[in-house]
Image 1 (tube, rainbow, N blue to C red):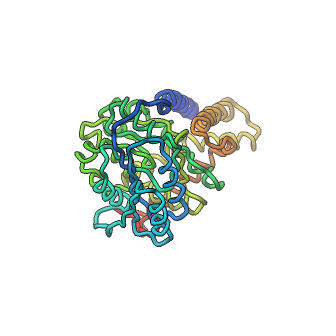
Image 2: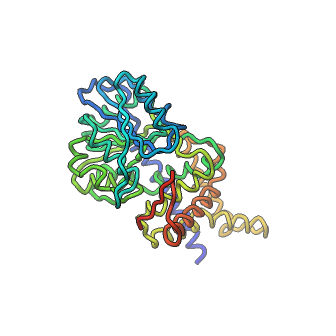
Image 3: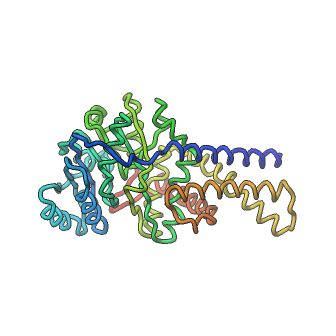
Length: 379
């Protein structure tokens, strides 16, 4: 029985490695050169307590080499210096930047979706770019993404930004987002299949055809979803629209979190929600992770402690670990992640499982997840 388990684990990991390789082929970079576009773009930024980020984000957006665009930032009830910074930036922008004060959060809405919905109402463009306040954009980001949207003919485009990583805990946990994406979701099916189960989007950068965005009622379609980006993709596909995604690591970067505490609470807010608050899905993830990514290390430790180096207890687990680390290394190179942390991959999984349990317990037995002064619990 143990033999069949070891073989099944190895085969599964090889399949996931194959998915990684195919995904890297399908997730293309943005076209380098794009013909001039007549589309007017509204760049929309929700901001809540973003004093550390908002200035560098807005300044990078003001430096775009795209002609026809506006920037609208919505201050979503910030209690820090965000409003003052926005007023100063608006005065320097020559009319390119507008700053709005957000309305009170209605019942049944999550904060970011409500902020984005308000931004969508104010936008004048026929294309809408929703981007987070903790992002930085290269001068050609808007031009190339608009060109990619035109070439693809899609209604919605998303990018995978480069994730800036500072602290140890950021380096340990944040790269797992792309590892899980690249191993478990065949990206080609995101834009070729009508099945909403194959959906992906990154809320750090989503470009919409406004006409289609309005047709699905914008962010009102996902008003109660914390992981609003993926659910937006589902809404587009259910409405018969098309989506696409590109590797955007060379044009957009993002610093999601800045320390271990933010990593803990930020991922706790999103993880159980990302599974649709489905307890069986959470426990299935925990069991699969334990069997595929943690158990091989336990077999290796046992072999080293007992000096038993059989094929069943040492060579097969060693092969499993090698396949996993190869997958992680390939993904790290593709998304410009620190290579030094690759060998700690098993600890990344342990940390993620701890966050998963905290996310579950906080929603089911606590007061829900908390982020930037708001509690989230729509289970």
